Picture 1 (tube, rainbow, N blue to C red):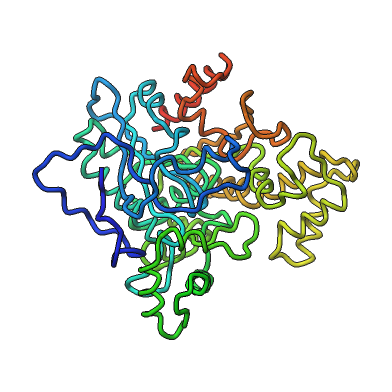
Picture 2: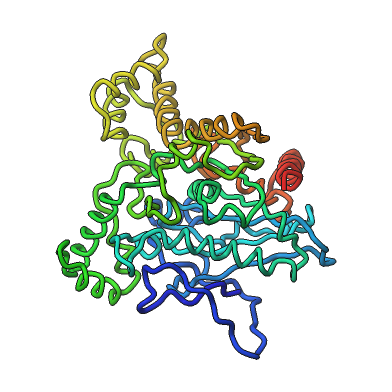
Length: 445
């Protein structure tokens, strides 16, 4: 179902406009919506563990749609679970097979909603001008939240009991809605899987965002003068969306995504760490946690030579020190020495497995786990119920090398009940485990 006007032509880069309806005829809403335009991952060719995250529907700028799945028979006043997909704010789509909610909905009798929101430069370009105001993708999510509040009762959902849940950048988004004065009244509580507003990659400075926008303009051969942005914006609006998203990646560190939220003065008026310190957030219950190996997925993409996607990868002491440098490009020597001191096993400094695992913990702690724990802690201090988990189950059919353990996003299959799909060869224990996870999530909602 469309929830906003198509963000095309002059509306590219702008905040979404409310939809004006579609006249008298009945709209057929039975096909999956377009995915928003984004770069396609082919680093590992057609490897299933990577391909499963690529869009499975046509990519178009006309992508602001909401999906609703309702149990049969239709409930009255059921709990609503609203999913926000992840993908580093540069990728992702609500239509992925792994997010298929039919099992979750039929098992737990919740009303499920998910929204498409704009990603990459199309969703987060910022020039501090009225027509490129930044955070468009977050305003997409907000408009979808408002739509649910207004309309979900027609589908048997309770507009006064909406649980936001998301993973990675989706969890960071959920957490930003907890902080934003604009979103707070549109939902009841929140589930955050492997992400929080305070992760280092979720927000960049306004200045950095503008510089990246100018760099993008230069890369696609648009005018790129900072003093006269009119022609640059005009030119960027005329470029094909594919050309934009394929030219965003300059030299970025691990877990740095080119266009992400900023402190725009409307959706967000201060840094998340400050909001947390001042307890300036929606007071409500949370369920949140991390996976045991949050770092490896990103290391596999960033250090492709040192950490190839094959069995039995080991890391020497020298490689470890080199990797610490490459994975922490912005820290000074003192911090780097602290990292080198903290993570290895000093009784076995040359153990290639322990060195490899130390790199995973270093990346995972900094980019995910510590921020998640800190966010949970700050919330608990205010007397809210905060339920936390640490997810450590590796599926027996996991396609990644066995040393990668429990990767970032591995829990999603279990939250959505994929093991109950008999075609997917999970063990009976995994089926039971997935039922438990779905029950926890739905009981919380």
